[in-house]
Amino acid sequence: MITRRTLLALSISAACVGLAGCATSGLDNRPELAGVVAVGGPLAHARVSIVDAKGLRRNVQADSRGRYELDPSGLTAPLLISAIEAGNNSNCRYNATLRARCLASVLTELSPGRNIANINPLTDRIVSDVAVGLNYYGPQQLVDAGKAADITPAAVAAAKKTSLEGFAAALKAAGVSEVERFDAVTTPMQANGKGLDAVLEVVNHNRNYHNPSSESAYTVLTDISFRPIVGLNGSGPYEALDFKRAQQELAAIKAAKVRVLVVGDSTAATYELERMPRMGWGQVFEANFRPEAGVKVLNAARAGRSSKDFYMGGWYQQMARFMQPGDLVLINHGHNDQNCDGSKKERGAADVAGLCSYPNDAQGRPQFPSGKPEMSFHNSLLRYVDMARAAGATPVFLTPTTRVWNKDRKPGFPVVPQHLTTQNSAQGFAFVGDYSQTVKDAARASGVPLIDLEAKTISFANAHQQDWQNYWLAIGDFKAWPWYATQSAGTAKNPDTTHFQQRGAEAVAALVAQGLKETPALNSYAVLLK
Image (cartoon, rainbow, N blue to C red; front, side, top):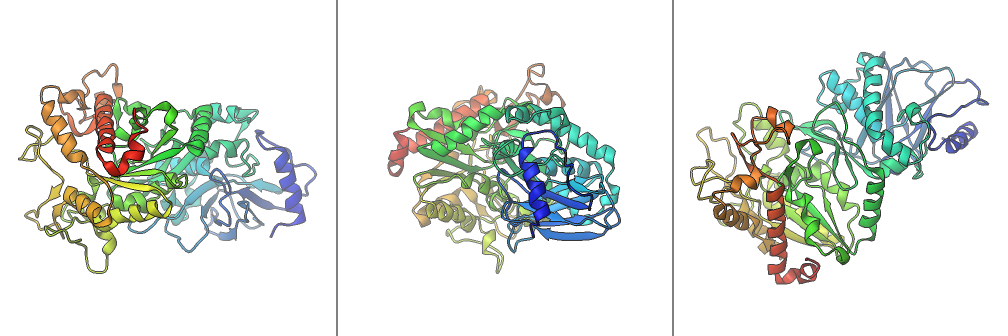
């Protein structure tokens, strides 16, 4: 319940929007804990939970503006605070079912009077850094353990310092004064599109995936066009958010005549600057459209994701919120859906639970364990068709890009189709089959246009046997690209036969554009191309 006293406090907070701090003199010293749950707008009616250093728990619900308050009497700092989006879904950890939007924050000190503890993507990454330092996969495992007593002020201060270094320029550009005093947790704010909230409006938030367990892991932040801010590492420096560019791109997304949404994996993804020149084809696809055509590409493709957990993990939802009638949805999965070998020692069970979806049989019929139709690759693909059509958008299926493998499934030529599974000696696969053929089956069954990108990239690879390493990732110049000096793959000595460098990404993007032009049902989009 919002009291008169809270309204007074909020009015003071409103005057402090964009400031690094704000005096609260005039309020009495009765203890109070309040804050805003925001993700670029309020997380309305979020369920907020607080656990203190002694394991005591309190729960409260935020209001329609994302504001919450409670009496913290009896609680001992540090406080580990978490928020879950409103609704019946409380799953914050597992990708076998849809993950809820979940965030965390931490307050290291409690004063006798008013205490502010906001919960937002920046605070979630702060808790994430602390959690990784305590050997948790990510913030949710720390929240679920409730071990607030293990959190040290020094660890929180270090995480806040790293965060501020990454976002200082963006906060200043958003109108935050005295940026050096800004604290994402304790600086008063409102979810009103100003100051910190303006920054949050152009930041996408999610949590990564922990391969050995299939649980959610450390916090990932990208800008509005899905360029990583933090994502490659579980802790450490951020890549700068260009706030003005992100604002311009958000405006372009909203104003575009056509938005092209890329649903995909690492072969299409946008990568960290640190990993340049590695690129996915979706990262450079927009360059194929005429500038005056009013096309904006939203590339939420994510490394390591399958068709199943790209949706379950919330990656699709990040860009689908912008989808409008007439938009184009390019669905390009298949690589990671193949992770269905339950006999693998380290990741077998986790892969089956989190990534695996099964291909159709030789007769084109979906295969899945009894009672689990969502584990069919065919059915998983059709989910995106249904969601696109419900929004008035046009879905298109793409078979996965080729690996540079020969008939022996080893790097070499001639390259042949590789997106299929066969039973191994350990009988580790519940079902086997051809993933590219399943994409074709799904396209035919649903009347969705198909671009056979596997066939196109096989032809391209076989035409470039002498210089294929200029397209796939095979870095030899470590002075230009120092990150690869410490890597065991993606180098000239050990080329990556799946992922692309810039020339390869551009070549594959051109093949996708060619596919649009070759498909009569997509003529209204093909005319927008250069």
